[in-house]
Length: 196
Image 1: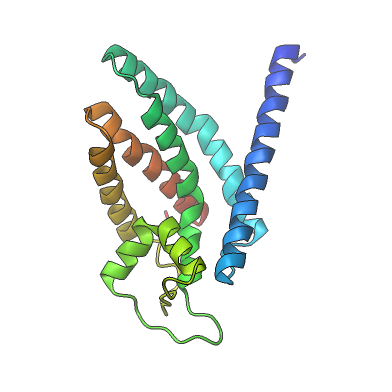
Image 2: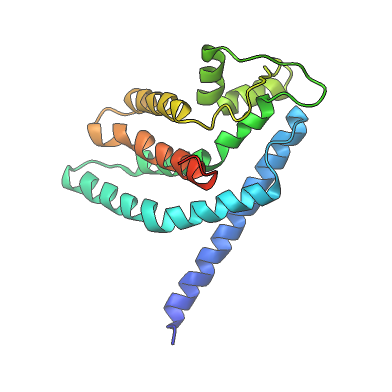
């Protein structure tokens, strides 16, 4: 028999999952409307979301506990970097599908994107999407599908997250947070898409 506390915790966790999923779908639909392009379908979002919840419960929560313990042992306050890391984990679970914004559609002509444009789109996707949505930049289209779905992209994103950690934090523990949590989310996405 399930205890009332365990049952309440389970119900609370399900409700939180539902709120996060609805918020994620709202963001995806907002971006799609702004740039007038399809990013991902609801079915794909649900597939990635369910694996993200599984990975969060079995991989990220133990990492969070270890991270807090290490911070406590070294007398460091790590809550700010932990929150950023968790946001990057959630972001990494969905943003590789933003590459569908930059893939050639039926009536568009494209070419292979240069390496620096791929890096810019990969590392600063939210900023780029915002600039496209307000009409400041034109969307660069590519013939290559799934430009963010490769281990080369994972490496570039990992270098970016490392630099971000060095820019934002001064101690070694917090520097690692964006890299560890952000790459965990990215790799979880590639796992769902069967890239490894």
